Image (cartoon, rainbow, N blue to C red; front, side, top):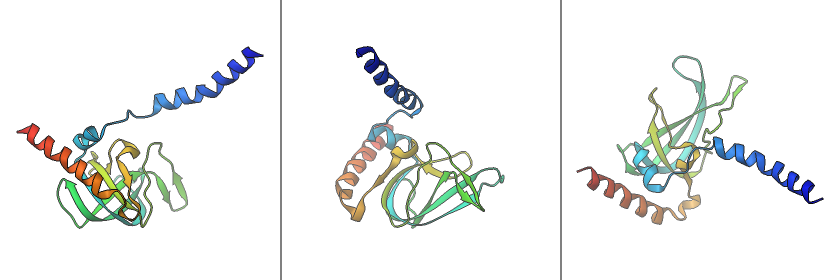
Length: 155
């Protein structure tokens, strides 16, 4: 009986071991900041799917009306692009791709891909949601402190 329970328990834990092996390493807020080209907050206005410039892959693009820029160039809007999506009846699902919803109040840590798109840093870890702005001021103060410290460290 004990062996059966032990085997069952181990079998239940096996998928977790495989999942953890495939998951990207968790980054600290300092590491996320360092690895990001841009950090913005705002509201997701709309999204759409399109093929990349080589017509090979579907990407979903999210337009964000920017309220604050904590790192990088300031723009009124930013387009966050994530691989995968639905286009002309074809669905492409990419593991680790980050999804945003229209109307969400977010902060996003972004990096520029080799094809020029801005994408969420470290998959979904670079996406933070602040419904109605709750918690944003404290989060912003901490990230501003990190960004300032990294600027000083580069001098």
